[in-house]
Image (cartoon, rainbow, N blue to C red; front, side, top):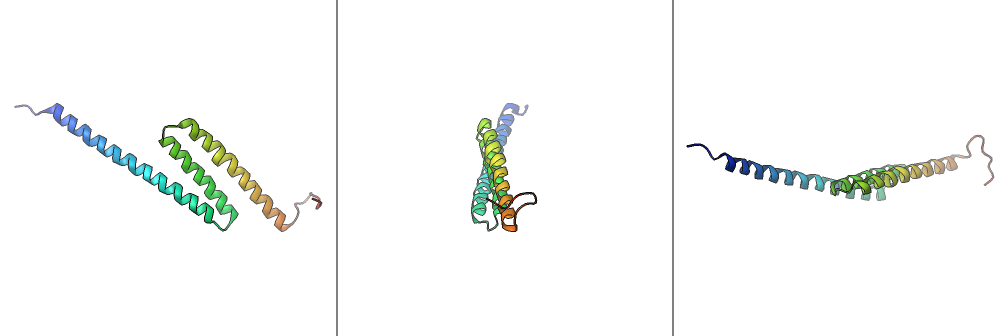
Length: 112
């Protein structure tokens, strides 16, 4: 008697689907944990530079979440605005604050 190949293929397919579902849930859980941890650590950072870097990383984690939710347009906007532009502005502001603390930049007058 020949083995029941279609039945075995269906069983293998069901096992593969269960494995992929478990893997997808694990990936989603890692993204959620990473996002929450980055948000809390960015809020609790004592140094402004560390907070800005963690904020940029948080934006990238949110971008991954949007990709997982199959919203590539929102993910692209989040990466560009949430991480890229806002991160660059935060880092520029921090650099200006540090320069202001140490004194005027060469070539700039001291008047406000």
